Image: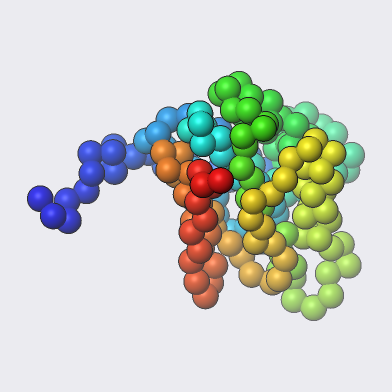
Length: 175
């Protein structure tokens, strides 16, 4: 019947990744979502051959400000969350050579001058880690002063980025 949802859409599951958290999946019925990326970074990874991917939503660039917090919640910090994220993807048989990456967030959402420059520092930390590990980004939507919401459809590899003024779709499964 025209206009009816597909059987996959009826049983699709959404997992919401909060600030300082991450999720990986190889379930083709899964959509991973993270909301309100301001100065935080959302790193989205997808291996099209494995149909496995994930989202890391880290808040701060460096865990040395709170080692106890980093031990309890490593995804909150770039330096502890990024290695954990890629180990988790490897656990799903995602291969670094096939992984397609998208980075979103890193905005300066504080009105006026931001003396801490958390968004810029978070963006730089992701770039440094990825470069040091021979990984490259397919698409980046960072900086500025707006929040972003990101959804990753594990079945298709399509990432939807919702911004206040528009919505963008990026296909991570396409080479």
